[in-house]
Image 1 (cartoon, helix red, strand yellow):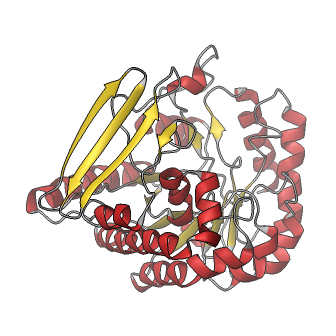
Image 2: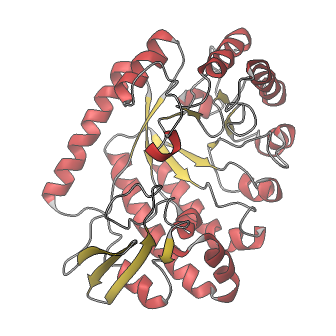
Image 3: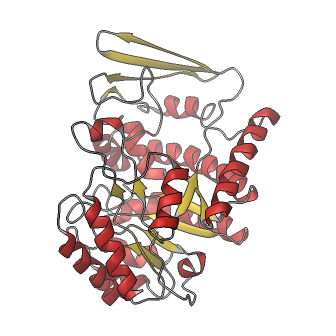
Length: 372
């Protein structure tokens, strides 16, 4: 897999589908279709052993607030409030509780459930960013670092047992801004208050660099940077280049300085920025959906194919949710025809989900075995 991500010669094209256990509310009323339970060990045992495909194990590192920081959370009616008290003042947010709110009695940062439930977003002013500087920090205490190293050792042993790569999921940028400001607010503020967005992104970027440095030092094979919403679905090419260009290059450079791989998740809205993406030194573009909207596999291959590998395949919007195994097979054939066998890794975009018909995964794997 690592060789394929580097566009090196391999004995077969890897099939390494991302397997999504799905949050509880997404599974309500639907049958669990995976032939294994919801744990990494069970998944790896079945996927690598029984199904004979490749996989990747992913790990994360949280944030560790600085001195003089505390938080409290409470509920009034159906509204959950959370306040962080910092040396720069209070940072607060509120969400509306309903049956789809999964984080419990909490309002987390950088969570996809935030925007649809926000009563008050986390970031509204420069003072909020100043408060965040005291909270969104890497670990520093010996005990915290020891616990993180232990978790990494556990993950590395599991990865070694099943002979899979270990990647650090880190960095959210404008994707995280959606979770902190709200999608409409983030998009508008890039134009109306660019200094506020820039200040937030710099806090996030400095945190990203420290987390990436730590994870790479602990033995991760690479970084998976989340660019899911960093696309022209929400932002113009000019906005993406202005706010992300130098920061993504620095994050990639740090990863490469450790001799490791920098991968970037981007599902849709990528066609207007292909030339820019080609300048960022991304080793692998993860989950570009070539079947949605203006997705174009051949254009991707022509623009980025000289330097970038592609982790792609059937769409989890168009193909995978329905009993359409022949369409899944056709999608696998299409990406092989468009990208060739160099620098291609097969997965549903963005994942195979636990409630999707399992026959589609089997069809994808069977067609891959014919072509790889």
